Length: 267
Image (cartoon, rainbow, N blue to C red; front, side, top):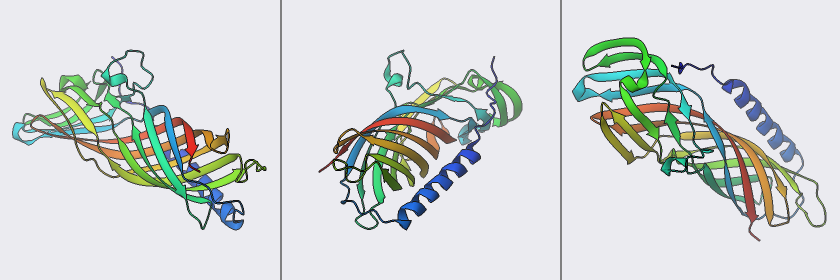
């Protein structure tokens, strides 16, 4: 049986690099105000994959005397699954944004991102706390206590982001530039749907989630003045709180995203 303890992603280094790149981009853009015409609002539909790093899952059932922490639970995604069922709906997102008149290199956007995560209940992890009033500190498969834990109708991020842009390859047809390098930061909320089976008792529901944050960086290539293709890296963090039978749960999700999009610029 595989262990759910995994070497963490080097999140700190990647995030620091992205923040530095965004700051450098904004500084260079501010140093030379873009003389090109005002850029139009846009819509972008995107899809991709997410990888969520291992994290602790906590469950509480006060009336049952249970308060357990499952350390470094592994999470899987089914975005590329070939088993077509309700859990294999692909990763999908949509973003709408507009550019400020001054400074013209700065934009504001609102996006919704739908992706799912599934705990690997069969894997070994350290379990500590109390179970039915009895002290627990052991290594065991999670499904000894929780038979299923998923955020399977989506983590559902709703995020507003501010982005700095730098355009390249200007021409008569592409007055604002054909290549758009961008980076930004954002925050918002989640509307997760958690589904669980604890000691044979199933429960699932949508709930208001907690604060979510993101860092992003990418590049868009304009096929025409109205259409573009983009690729983007995002790093998001949020805490998912979910109701379970006779109690509640909490998991912190740190997710790396690689997405590809098709954008429409509204003229």
